[in-house]
Length: 396
Ligand code: FEO
Image (cartoon, rainbow, N blue to C red; front, side):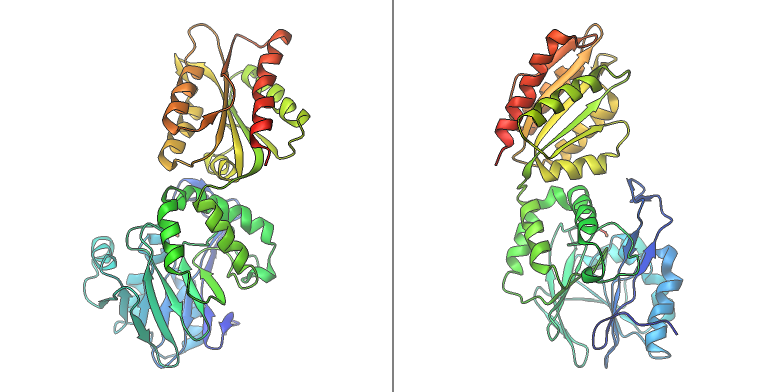
């Protein structure tokens, strides 16, 4: 018999921890793992909210059975069809063939497409309710947070919002399932990395979703990744509000692409000049070393961004070019920009950075600086001007 993890009377966490997958979506590193949260309401109609990534299906079903015993699952709520949450539906249906699958009009074609599931499904209207006996569930669509069919489920008596990807974070649950059992700062960082890379493009839609739920009293936020929020609800809602509006903190992120260290040394000169102006939040990264998901998360946090690149075959250094492409896709707004770089003969790195500045439409705080070969002591003042201008511009 597994020990139950209860959110309230008869509502349980039946999620799993994934500490062996290297990269989430086969893309973003998850050195501290990730949880796939699912929930069970034990009631006249036993109801499961979301499933887990398919590799963890046996552990998930074991947790459900440890609570229900021989009783059946009557409803499965599918808040989101992305396979980290829907991957175990077919297996759950084998276990509980009478189970009805509850989603919305956009859920059902996706279930058909991914899994060939056409029967068993109920499409709920916006704001519609479903009684499981003592509990009532209400459904709100939140399109593009994270996919078009995404929705959240609200349990009315305990005021629990099952928010799926919204308010979710990377990081397995190392014993603590609830935020008051964990270290908030760790999950705040990993929630911002999840948000900025996965949902960040859809800030307008996040704002619409938050407006829709504005009048709903929330006692607990139960997302599908990371801790269940019951102590820091106002704080995480405020963070989501700020991130979706692209509001930033005082600070400067400096990211450089370098082959032999010349551009890296330029970055250090600029960073020093920012520090001399009194800015304390300064983060410097080598674009070849730190995965872009961390860089994007830092850019979501801080107001100032300074990018530097060497030239490579007449264009920008490829890892920096890749970061720029991702930023143009996500389009964070309201950042301040400084640019620098180096060249050996024909250049190209700084030219591409200047083109990026035009496309992303961030305010450029100082003229870009391009140094041929390696920066000399007489070049340092020009580089320091970028740092000084940025420090003045980001100060709140
Ligand atoms: Fe956690 Fe959009 O899936």
